View 1 (cartoon, one colour):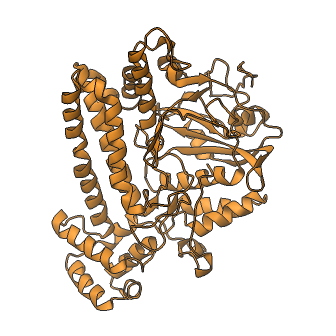
View 2: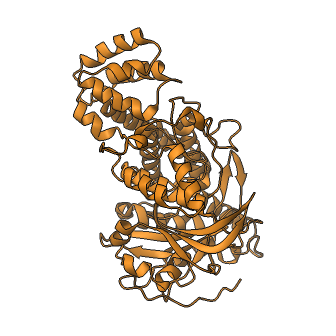
View 3: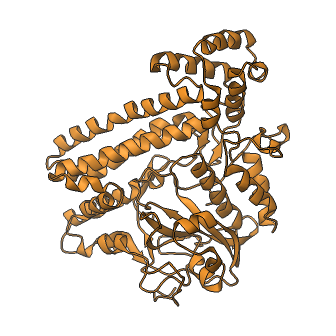
Length: 512
């Protein structure tokens, strides 16, 4: 694989991509280039997002645009890199992961002035690949497109898909599949695992200063975590730069990440989203959702729901997502300890106190969101919490999560039939509904926060199967429905319905 820069593209409005990450934390940035794509062909282009980024959709459809989207023709002056990071995967620490089949092309500033990463998945094998082929198939890349955009339209922070481009190459999996590259954008791709890797490099540097223990560790100076933290502050929390004390500034960074993640996972829970693989390398510093391999949405409500084929112990079950997020944030604290205080014992005390804010912030976000879903935002948390707990006891294992809250919206207007039919304990529901109705729930407010359309698993699978076979019609219809998730529209009835019985138990795989 050549490390030299390929022919550059010259797209209007793109300019030169920034490379602050590669410049400021070079130990975590391995210069690399994308593999050639034999016959690139655009499958999906997010024109709205392209416009937000200052890119011309028509130009992205040209040869130069396709070259950008698969990474073979980045802008002049850019520095594509494969990012290094570590991670706890299902609780076990992997000290050296990194972008095995991905490239950070660089940073671009959109029309709104915000800086975002332009990043590729499936762009070819890098030295981080650990035996993988570095490629991706059409289906998993389109999955990330549809689910990430679905979350965005639900108002949930997420990485976003700019385009999926078929490469013309064949990807060897259980069966030969058409290859593709996903171009996505994010506030950044900094993860908890990024800090874990930086801390490991610093520890290696502390242990030996006369010989490198890692390919990039010769010029560490023992301060990789500090420089990465400074980069994260400048990128995501620039208001913290005004804090004069180093210890307080880095503690404020940690508190900010704790807050962002508490809010994020609460929002997942409110819409029934199951991430499926909450390893620390999939936990962003920005508080955006990242990685969409074994993800899915609940059909029947059950906190023990697991979709991922490799999550045999249920570590990342739907109901485990809040405590797992807290566990992951504890791993971030461990990486940041040297920045919080020069004495480790005191640094640990500071970190534990800061992490303690997670449960309170999550509980507040969850309570506020659930009261809104029930149309009783005006009710205090204790009264609302009791109603929520009793409702979930009624619907567990019986009611479809998404459609049941829409049925409650109809119940708030006086039509209780659908909500009553959704549970076996009708008498229990009637008693619950009497308590709830006495609080005068706001049906209109409920419809504004309870989606009617989510990326239902059977619809996603149908769309991806058709797309892999060359037919994108179902994929495009699904995306159109999900673009306005709260607005009921004629002709989209099947997009609001639970999976048919014939769909059977659903299993997802780490295809992305």
